[in-house]
Length: 217
Image 1 (tube, helix red, strand yellow):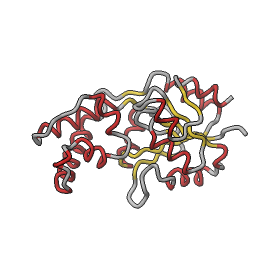
Image 2: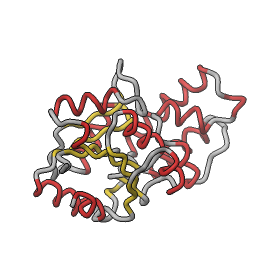
Image 3: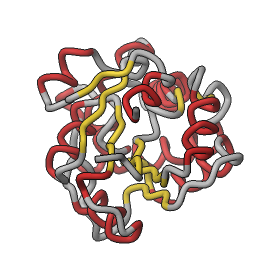
Image 4: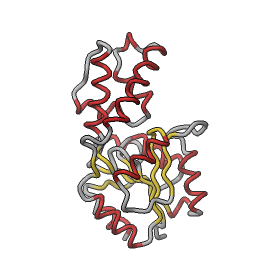
């Protein structure tokens, strides 16, 4: 059965956001007298929303609700000002989106970033492509890996589950795809390793964005 739609994760899949996320978070940690982390460590801190990121980077004995809330507020303010200092689409993503759009594939984005900020990121760095829906984390909707938002996208697109790929770079993404009965497609240029993607349900792995077009064949 041909695929008519693709739901993409954002960070680590379409956009390489790692350096800016790490830099903003480390500035907050340093300002509060906490240890900072190497950029590469953030591959495993991100992926489940901003609050979870702050929870993970704080020392274990400093994860009180007050401390998390204070650092989260500082992070959101810093990241809002500095989110695209280094963030760019991954190599090959513009060409992939061109090819998908030319083929008439319906495109959507589902991120665990806050919703308004997700929309802003896409409009700023991916302005040349039409995404039918762009969803970040919204109040009242459980974040990924809960399937609610993915299923909402399918309902609005009027595309059956069997005709939609879900493309992402983490276990959270693969779990989302499995829970929503979508085809779980893992990317190897993102934040996590092949083993994690396979363990959590990836049925195909992409080494380069152009490999997605081959999968669609």
